[in-house]
Image 1: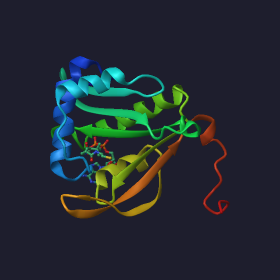
Image 2: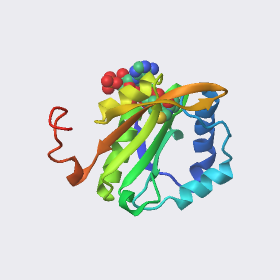
Image 3: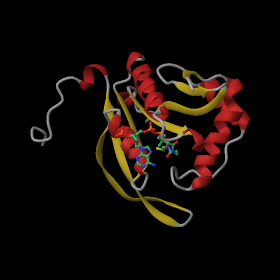
Image 4: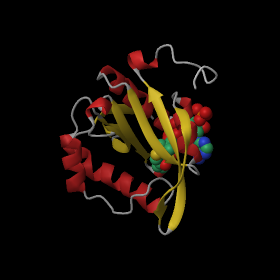
Length: 177
Ligand SMILES: CC(C)(COP(=O)(O)OP(=O)(O)OC[C@H]1O[C@@H](n2cnc3c(N)ncnc32)[C@H](O)[C@@H]1OP(=O)(O)O)[C@@H](O)C(=O)NCCC(=O)NCCS
């Protein structure tokens, strides 16, 4: 099946929300517990504008995944830093679709002039950690007991990927203080 990756539009909102809600319900991917409606998802898609992006992956005429960047902080110094999320429909996972989608999201982020993309992954989310490593993220460290999900403390791994000029001549682990 050919995978098409393209910018999301409001007409994708129901599919995007359904995939997001399945990820929320799983309890494996995010601290979020409130399901998203199609309407608020449409509003989020419409409100996303450069330098941020909202992409969907389409296979066989159906949306099977989405990925988005959004502001990391309101502080001006951090205007070039974005956070990201990525969710694939369960039946579409493990086939390289996440890799393609996230790689394209990063390319778009770099083209838009962002200098860093970051996220926090549940330490137990092996697929997400492997995916991030595969597209060049480094694991910065672990926030212990960063929040509770359904009453249980969860550790999260902070990941980052530098882009554009910020990615050039990075000091090695040994050279950093
Ligand atoms: C995390 C997710 C986006 C990965 O997308 P995917 O299409 O399944 O992943 P891919 O097939 O592109 O594989 C990417 C890498 O992860 C590895 N991987 C995939 N599924 C895995 C699993 N269940 N366990 C361990 N590694 C896994 C692949 O082997 C590949 O690594 P490699 O390049 O080193 O071989 C997807 O599984 C998903 O939507 N999960 C639920 C939601 C979620 O956790 N989102 C992330 C929240 S931060």
